[in-house]
Image 1 (cartoon, one colour):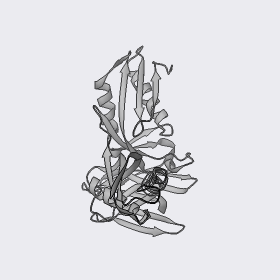
Image 2 (cartoon, one colour; image 1 turned 30 degrees about the vertical axis):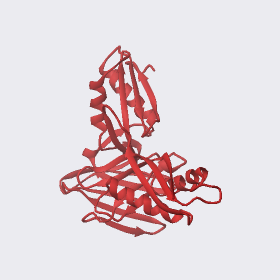
Image 3 (cartoon, helix red, strand yellow; image 1 turned 180 degrees about the vertical axis):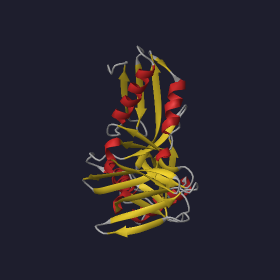
Image 4 (cartoon, helix red, strand yellow; image 1 turned 90 degrees about the vertical axis):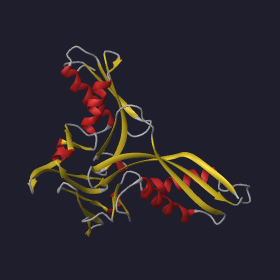
Length: 290
């Protein structure tokens, strides 16, 4: 038998729920290996079919979704009318995250928690039935991008987006670089990465209400997008509010303008990533010059 591989077949940008850390954004690179007999073309599977069929299956089922471990103690998932679901996920500190959205915004995995092993098993189980008879085995390798220096994991939703970014709880693991007067400033870079680590970056316009429950202060976000109505409630301590849509362009500019106010007359340039190998630059001086 022969083995075929495709590295970096796709990148999965998603969020998942963790009992202690809460709502986490992540970005994982997916590599695949196929083992099987050669077909009439002398191939295990045509590369075009691997990229078309397998990439599409991964993207459709796992990418830009909130991935939920159904075996987590106390988790509740209830079907609602019009193809929607309500999720309540308890955290170890006694607080709770609630998510209400169209069913396609969620991906459930039969596991007590989301880990590289449980997610890999779910992806392989989704892909293997799609293979032709000559393919005997399929192995998926999920890996995080190697990052030297600060990184942060954030979740967000973009209600104006035409695609799946409109889902209110998807996210990324991202790099960040801050330059001050043309010199990289690792202290400022680390400070902002820490500020947004394990956070939900919400648009102030989408904030429906603030409320208190069992001693915890919460934000409730709600908006209507092309895919339907989305709602998310989570502790205020796990959120960061901005005045614009949370696109990577706006996030980079937000950091640049905040820092320009702290360092009058200095030139600030920010390179913010949205997952792997993509992102935007923002730059500013005091007073909003760009």
